[in-house]
Length: 134
Image (cartoon, rainbow, N blue to C red; front, side, top):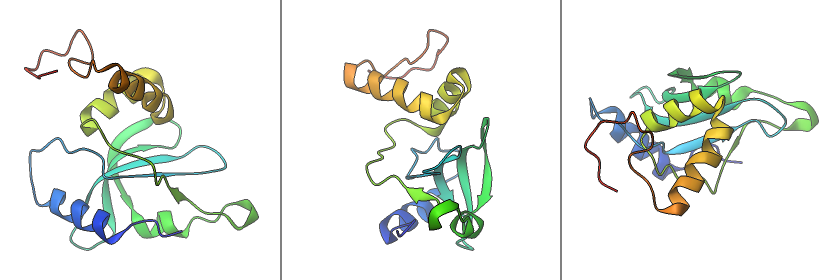
């Protein structure tokens, strides 16, 4: 499987050139056999360092090496995969806060998907004091 399409790479590179923006995740990678989910929002100009939300036991914002993600070999000849149905509907800060509260990116995805389907997008939490429109 191709882990990163040309369109996704272009968007990730464009996002990295915009500072102080709460980007939507562009792509989701996951371990099909266990723990490990990564939501990427940016890609450095070198084409290898990604930024976003990673969860390999606890969700954290940070950077990781794309080539190392590609090189992971799992049992049965499998590797890390790209979620072809993923759509990053919320900014990465919302993903991070929800994942921390829920305990994982996978749990956060269920919460945020339900929130989106209900049409009640903002505010996500009562403590969310930013001026966001529904």
